[in-house]
Image (cartoon, rainbow, N blue to C red; front, side, top):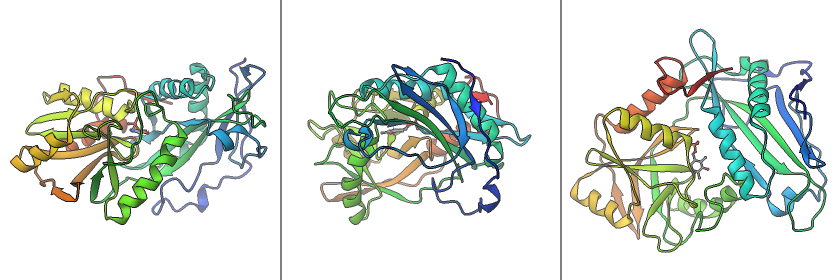
Length: 351
Ligand SMILES: *Cc1c(COP(=O)(O)O)cnc(C)c1O
């Protein structure tokens, strides 16, 4: 396959219709999208086209068997109007890991990087300046082959679409610790960013919402004794001055924000303990006052502090403290992402 991307520009831009001060997450999309088809056993010529609906046969396998994986990443604009990506190769590696689990062919890294940068360059006016503003980037792959036999498709589409996003404040997040439902199980697809993992979370989460909790902290499917993830984020606990988080596994998604926070914590001389953590330990720490913070981590919100958790009907409030670890990590990460500080890790990449 050839790497040269065929670019068809939109005739007019929709950008002037957008109210960038009042965006709801993921509802407005930029002028262009990246598309690449897989057929006859290989990825075809990649294209950038005006953003537009897809036409798919109703028998396309994605509709029937959920062969779909995705990624979430962001582009940031610095004060000199340069646009930056954050660890983009990690997203490509992860989507290919997810694809492998869903029997979807891997996408070539060079084509991804070239396509991503060309797309963001073309739509760089959609990356609004200002700390907290970003362009949310959604790469995804779907099985398009028209055939409802229950086997892996022979045809796919790899797409990248982009949506402008404002600084994301999740408000007061109260969480319910899962006792019955599970997000993932051993041998399953929990480590993959599979579309179906999200579909399966909606119902238990809506039940939690009805009880006044915004998210669920998922526990291991076997015993419901170990804390795994918070909603669609990785989860960290601060016990005294140690940061504790579960090791990634076949059930836990290997978050890029999680990885970055662990690195920053270590380099800030904060003790990090990556080990399984029990619900009973969390309750004990809450009772004896050693629990200082709980927060989720993910691309959308960077960190999302959790103010209370509930388990078997008891509600435990997390104390509000000064000098939060979560604020430190958020600031350090944002400073790297927005080119406001040195990037000793090489995470920031110019387009
Ligand atoms: C995407 C995702 C995360 C966060 O990953 P980041 O790379 O940090 O955005 C965590 N858990 C689940 C289940 C996810 O789908």
